[in-house]
Image (tube, rainbow, N blue to C red; front, side, top):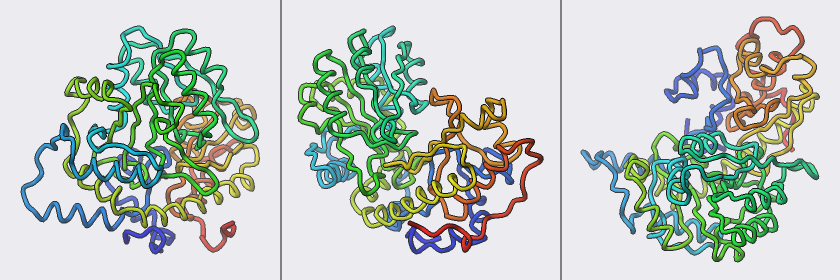
Length: 416
C-alpha cells in the first residue's frame, strides 16, 4: 500500500481483506480471522508518506529511542500544533501553551484531577465517548448525563439541560467537539451559549477536539476556546494526530489550556498523567501537523464518499435502521431500536458477531442502548461488506456466519 489514500487501488481490490488481516493492531487481532472488525475508531488507510519519511529519518539516526521529554515548551511538535491551529482555525496559540500528554484521555484525567474534587459533579452529553464516563468514575466524581436531542435531522446538545447541570453544581463540562459517536459539528451559536453558561456558573470546559481535522464540506469546526464568548472561561482543549492521521499506537497528544493558571495546574498534575509520550509519536505528530495537509485532504475525499455510500447501502439493505450523515469523523451511528424491537433482543452486538461475523461497538457503551457504531474509514468494498454482514446478522432467524467474501466493487452504488 502507498501513502496516498486516493492512489491506493489495493485497498479497493479483492485482496484488501487479506492485506489488512496481516496487521498487528488490536483491531485486527482481537477477534478470529473470519470476523470483520468495525469497532475501534481506527482507519484502514495507509499512513501518510510524510509521516513515514519522518519516522524513517528518526530511526536512521540510530539509538534515539529513549523516553520522550514531555516538559519542554518549544519543541518541533508544539510549534507544529500551534501553527496548524493558527492556519486551520485562525486560533493564535503560543507553542509553550501546547502541553504534551500520551493521549487525550490523559488530558481528560488531568483536567478532572486539577479542576474538581472527589465527589464533584462532571457533566457530559450522551451518547458520550465511553472514556469520559470511565475517567470521571475512576476519579471518584459523579457523572451527570445530559441526553442529546434529535432535531432537524441532527443530534443537538440540550442547552437547557446544560444549564440545569451547571446550576445544580457541575464543576466540569466534558465537551466532545466534533462529537463522537454522532459525527455532529456543533454550531458557533451552540458553543457560544455553552461558553456564556460556563462563565456564569464558573464551570471548567474540557473540549475533546481530536476529530477536529475530520470535518466534511458544508460544516465548519470552531475550537471552543477560540470563541470570543470563551474569554474568561477556564478551558482546556485536547488534540492529537491519532485519529486524523491514524497514529494512535504512537502515543502522543496535546492539552491546550486557555490561561496561564490552568497551564500551571496541568503542569503540576501527577507525572503519571504526563509521562508515556512516545518519542516516535512526537516525531510523527510533528510531520502530520506540519506536512500532512495533502494526505488529509485526499483522505477526506475518500471518507466523504464512504459516509455517503454507507448511507445508501443502509437505506437499501437495512431500511429499519436510522442513519444521519455525519458532519465529521469516520464513524457511523446507527439507530437500530426498531430492529431490536422486531427481534425482541437487546444484544444486537452479539447477533452481529455470532451470525454476521462483524464486530461493532454497542451504543450502550455510549449511554444509548439500541444503537450501534461502525467505522467506515476503510475501502468501499469493506464498507459494503460491513452492511452485508450486519444485514445477515440482524435478519430473523439468522443462521451461521456468512461466507467470507467481499462485495464486488463494480456492483456498488455510484458515488454521489
